[in-house]
Length: 423
Ligand code: BJ8
Image (cartoon, rainbow, N blue to C red; front, side, top):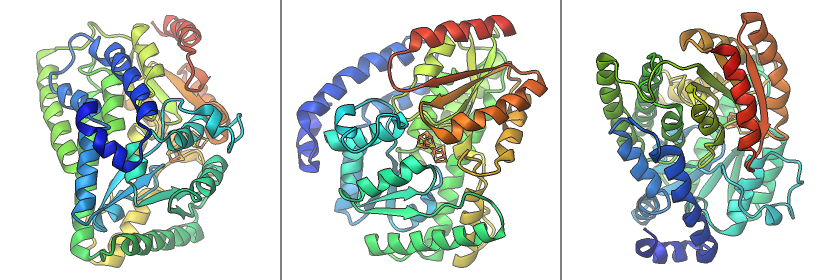
């Protein structure tokens, strides 16, 4: 891949030497986590290919889109409404980082005891190894956790950033404020792109984003099969790719995979043998290429049957109402949909606990592994409420606080003890 794309990366301002180092470590890791699995669905080959070209072909598509007058908009959170970006002629790309890059550089700006997702996201920018962020005309942030808010201020010195004010409660006045924030973002996107968001374009964008979510919901539904027809690792990879791939193409490919999985269910063809403990991972998102926890759980003899996180069902559970035809109605429908997201930054956040209990029931979950990124206040603190509810429901929960370092061995010991309890 590297030879074909070097000139493009150079033009984007990528630090080629550091980038080469990154590209060297990813293929062996990918091979170990994904290609080593036996009995994978054949249609996973598309997602393997997308990953292999994640800094190549997809970036070329972004560059070509810009050459033809479009814009690229980077996001760091599932609260950033991708429909608006699409309707303004933009391509939306997720920028959260899931591997440690340039930690010493990042710590010149940020404290060491900050969540690894934020430190690494800045590390990728400072090291000049992310062609996605270098392709962006605008970065959309949001006032979720304090770390992200302050990170956007730093990032704003390097690139144009628009921060949406996200309320922390879900009352009537909060909703009004959020509706107006959605409109402010729409105006900013129009200014950056020079393209007016009109009714037809927004209607189309809502449909495209909903179709993507429907495909992911269909995939989630197929993961209820016991024995499982797809691994949690593969489902996680698909969820991660959802943030960066072309949404129409991605939807087609997820549906093709689901067709294959439908057949597998009919044939009783599982991945990895007989039924095993069914685990749900809950908590902080896992940005590419963070696969550590899913890998540990599945190589310990269990299957991850669901992810209650933003690189999981929190991203696609809710659809935008497609009935409004006027611009104002559509903007309100978008605002309504995004406010249903149950991130731990909200207070109170009883919806999340209820949703977790619902998922445990619907996906026949034997135990929950709680994924807390170190120093993430919202999710580490909310673990208490989740634990309490799961205790009452008789479902064991293992709390894992981790970062992007190599602690797989210690986690594996604890996961194995959990699995012994539920076998
Ligand atoms: S909607 S989960 S993507 S905020 S892990 S940076 S919360 S300290 S990523 Fe998130 Fe949006 Fe919520 Fe989802 Fe802060 Fe926690 Fe770090 Fe986090």
